[in-house]
Amino acid sequence: MPPRLRSALSAALIALSCLLAPFGALAAWAAYTLADTGRYVTTMAPLATDPDVRDAVADTVGAGIMREVGIRFDTRRMRGTVGPFVHDAVRSFTQTRAYRLAWDAGNRATHDAVLRALRDEDGGVESTVFVDLAPVTAQVKEQLAQDHVPLAARIPVEHTAVAVLPAGRLTPFRKGFHVLEVAGFWLPVASVVLAVAGIALAVHRRRAIVATGLGTALGGALLGVALAVGRGLTLADLPTDVPPAAAGAVYDALTATLRTVSWLLVGLGLTVALTVWLTRYVRAVRLVRRRRAAATTAAPAPTRAEV
Image (cartoon, rainbow, N blue to C red; front, side, top):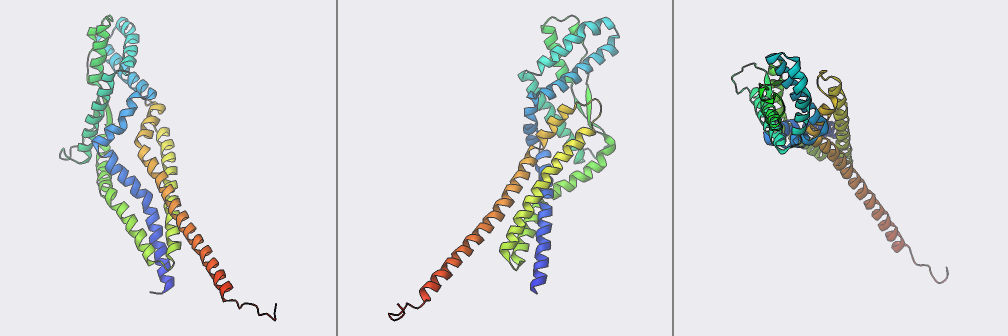
């Protein structure tokens, strides 16, 4: 194969490899972090102590309880009497161990339901996926009753359902999820194979390795920028009833692994490129020294007459 053709093909393979690196990281994150219930629950667990998330849960549960009180009894006296106690009790409950256990159990149940829907384990049924806040309401009611709050025993424990996956979007979500499950394994493998092939085919392999390292670092930097832009777009497109601070905390928790991977790609790429450049530089310096030493040794000694 002519050297020019080899160089062009090598450059194309390396460029494609560097392009696939951030996409492979994104697909692997979705397939092996978001699609794994245990990892998802572990990732979401610290959010139970996040102040913004606790406030959002307290407001949602408290509003749900008061809404049910209004529907059931339609009395301003009861809403005015119980309302402040309900909100204080819910906020107090979000600081207990029982709430953290309920948080983990709710996330696990919600994640399982979403996965079943995405994997079409329900026989293609197009139904909205909800998270049920009734267990939290029951805990709040019990705490209010223990504190002897008036009319606390009459608070209804209804299934306060919050939609997390609308039925109308299940079909495209399922298709995208299946693609991610396949791409999560094959995209990283393809990126590595293309990089190895491009370096092996290159005429100047050291330059090819440096180019691969720099391209990988650039891909990691672009992934980090995409995460930052995605965060801004996500928070800008929130429904009016979703607190931006809580949504930002959830986004940051879910994408923490991706941000780490983006920095790893940048660090790894720059380290490889710098190491190859330094070894080339050291080799060139040693070669120059050897040539000078050889030239000095080969030079004829001055004769007595010349002296």
